[in-house]
Image 1 (cartoon, rainbow, N blue to C red):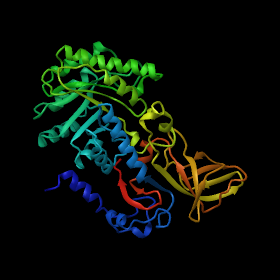
Image 2: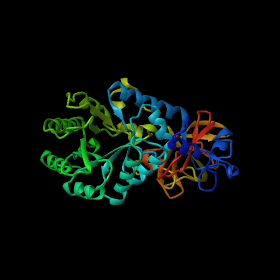
Image 3: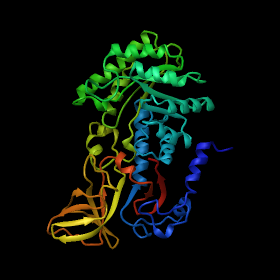
Image 4: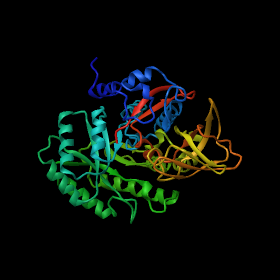
Length: 425
């Protein structure tokens, strides 16, 4: 059986040559293909890798993929994880293999990456009014009848721009009206009356087809369970009202979509109450940070803290850096900084120290600041830390961890690197 173009493209990732572009990889691996290097199953700590190097836990990644697959299935949700988190086609494929309906994305470049690696269903959680990008998507839809694409609309003007760019397209572009999370929130239509006006504009645009409603509850001002549930009830009611008004006439599936990584339990509750509509409802969840989870922001806000009986995500990233300076008993510096570690939500967390093959807890060690290429460590006077030690750092915010690394070792618990994850930012 012939491989589809996406599978061919994924296979070609293993043919890419390792060289100076990829931080942290063994210098003596230059010239090897990624596949050849993976086949050597080098150890992260003894195989020539140089600090700083970001590693992704193979076991924890598998756990997180399985957990969200089970969660979505248990709650009757379709799942389109947000691909902007990793921008890693190999992870897109694994997410789809673990039951994902498709991949959510945010901008046209990301859609191009997904299409290059065979993603057949894309939900663009954003408005799209760029004529060049719209014409490219129209060409993709025309060339591939199995390609499904849905994006937001939130203004009459945006609908007019889209229709002008798409005139003559072979297939109509499916759109959902984005309901804003509230006054002063991000994008989206502020009132139900304005939503109806945008829907009317879509109905009058030959190149567009209204298939549902969507939004992002994470932008609800002062988000708490009561406010988030109230907004989700508005979203469900909007879908019901549109359906009663015949706005979804002729569609085979009505899309109702929400769900970031902080409130997907509330989305599951609200979507369970969607009544029977004129067509089957695709209850589409879009959480993305779960794939690697983290040791900071998302560890604190994950819904699994509220519903522990559903399971728990596991932080899968660890950034390894080396102590390069120990100027005093209260201070040390490692060679990883803003170019290597997420820092927009929290600073990295010192977790373990590794010396001579022995790993121990990073007791009495705290990251207090980042320079471009250094992390500043405050150490208690009796902290056991020497120049040359490796320090394992936990990170906060997956999206700004992935984007600093083009090729990420996927390592088992004993340090054996079994694969490499290529990103495209």
